[in-house]
Image (cartoon, helix red, strand yellow):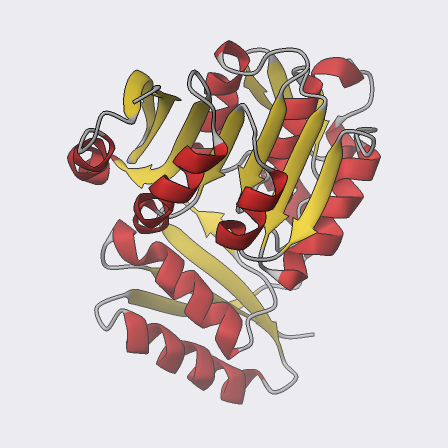
Length: 281
């Protein structure tokens, strides 16, 4: 079967999510990250028409994106794809796909089935949060994971001792994968996957001691009042999905009032993450 590979490199990193969303909306069945590029593969069934749709969708949100189209050789793409997904040692926890989980300590291993839902450990933003979590999560914590995707962060919170975690995700297509991962990691008694808008659902599961939000910086900024209302004084939030170039703007939003105190920052590549404490003011 003939296969066509489409590689799209957004003109700027800030348009990455918009390009990804446009591709899925136009009919892409999956995306893989290859450095700065987003890659999807088409088979020979209606490939020409779908290719035009995908290219048009990308151009509508990023006219300067670099698009490369090539024919692929006949290989076992399932094995090749699996070979690209590795184990990520992130301090207290390790994120692995199911085929690399054998022999690992379940208490410190988060097993994620890679599907369309975001969060396999392959992206810097996820790794930043997981590295920060051990100094924030305490035994018995109540946690909300906003934009949970594959539920990787919610599962990690449970493995670190949280006893009640709400994994909130508004993308219906991600819910089944999140529930599958929660069950596979043996944390269904602690993690509940909720489908819907976090601005609506977070107040319903509040109060929580920790909020995790690996989402767009613009969304985090808008949600700060809702997140703040869900946390008691002394509660914490870990924010990621923020470009290093956006750091100053995010810090300005956080310090515009006395409601937040920055306690830790980290970065990987072009991505930045921050731990903030909710003050009593």
